Picture 1: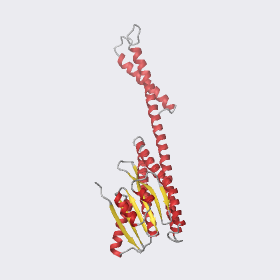
Picture 2: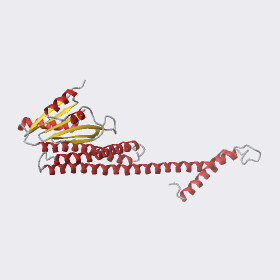
Picture 3: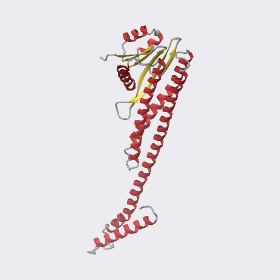
Picture 4: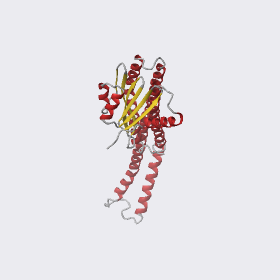
Length: 310
C-alpha cells in the first residue's frame, strides 16, 4: 500500500501544501482547512485525463499534465498536477512523484533551515512552481535533442539502418511534448486570467502571469524547432537508405550482367555435342577459362566507360 506524502511550507502570509498519492480522507481534510468547495474537491479525488480550469470568487482550480521520461527507452509518459490557488494558499495534488516539485520541496526545506520562514508571497511562489515545472520540461526536451544529435552522427557514419527506430522514438517524444504544451496553453491562459480578474494578488501579478505565459511559449517554440529537425532528419535518413538500397541493387545487377556471359560460355562448351568447339582438345579447360576472363574484362571495362560502376 502506498501512503500519501504531505508537505507544508509556510511563507509570508500563506502556505503551500503539496500532497502526493492522497487518500479521500486527506483530500477532505485539506478541503475543510482551506474551505475548498465540493465541486473542486471532487476533481482532487482521482486523476483527470484532460486539462481543466475552473474558479470562483475565492480560489481557482487547474489540472495540467506534464510530459516526462517513461520507464522504457523512447517512452514519454504524462504526469498530472492539480493546482488549487487562493489569495493566501496553494494546494498541489499529484498521484505520483513529480521530480521538479520534489526538488523544489527539498530546496525550500533547506532554505527554511538556514534562513527561517521564506519572505515571499503566494503569487511569487506560484511563479516559482511554474518555473521549476517548465525548467524540468525544457531539460527533458534538451536531453531528447542531445539524443537526436547522437543519432545524426551515427546516421552520417554509415549506420542509417540502425537509426530508423531511434529517430522514430525521438519524433514521437517531441510529438507528445508538443501535444501536452498545446493542451496546456489555453488552460494556463484561462487560469491566469481568472486570478487577474478576481484580483487575487494585486496589479503586480500581471507581470508574473506574463512571464509564466512567455515561458510556455518559449518551450513550445523549442519543441517545435527540435521536432522539425527530427522530421527533416528522418526524411534524410530515408533518402540515405534509398540511395544505399539503389547502390546495392546496382551492384547486384552489375554482377548478374557480368555473370551472364560466363554462364553462356559454360553452357555452350558444356553441351558435349558433336561439333562442339574444343570438344576433344586437351587444353579445353584452360582456353575456356581464358575466354571467360576476357569476357569479364571486356564487360567490366564497358561498364566503367559508361560510368555504371566505379
